[in-house]
Length: 191
Image 1 (tube, rainbow, N blue to C red):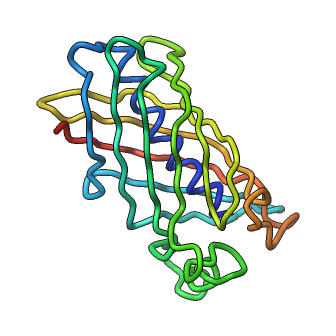
Image 2 (spheres, rainbow, N blue to C red):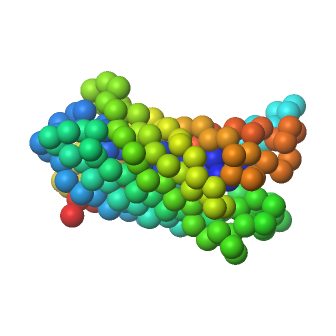
């Protein structure tokens, strides 16, 4: 489940670059550092019969470089710290951090590194890359939509779906979905 969450976060970061490039590359070109204080990485996992699990990651970092001459050469790098997972339920948070899911003690980081960025409209892009969680790496894709660009600050809304079983986090299936839905708001500061 959490691997999907991390994958979505990474994808969100990647999508943010293409969206910016699609709107105005001359204004958006450059390097940005993701500001965790004004960003969020949320996830949800469905459950048979309704309900499910919603949560977020409190600690993450990322960088976005937008190439104004070739959007495809833009880059997104993202790291999520799984020990920062929060659902509002202490017992579930501890379970998610355990070796049954994130194994945060032995795998303290989930990383996403973009491999390509493809503009899909004037304000959206598809960010493809490699997501690594629990020592396993797979190709993942996220959609990013430019939410704003003002005064050296850029904002993206990133969404995506990740199969948690690929990363050895399939505990609870099929009662809990194998699909983790990511919904991220990423704000980056130029510099």
